[in-house]
Image (cartoon, rainbow, N blue to C red):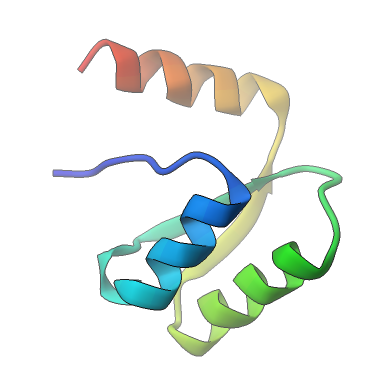
Length: 68
C-alpha cells in the first residue's frame, strides 16, 4: 500500500523517523531552501529517489489519492 505525504515538514519528519517507508520523493519544481536541501540529503543518504514535479503532476497525485 502506498501513501502520499504532503508538505515539507511532514516529509522531513517522516524521513527522519521512517526512511525505509519511502519509495520516492517528489518536490514541486522551483522549491529551494534549507529544508529542501535537508530532504535531498536525507533522500541521498537513504538511497531514496528524489525528483521534481510540476503543478499538473501534483494535482493528478492529489486527485488519485482522493479517489482511492
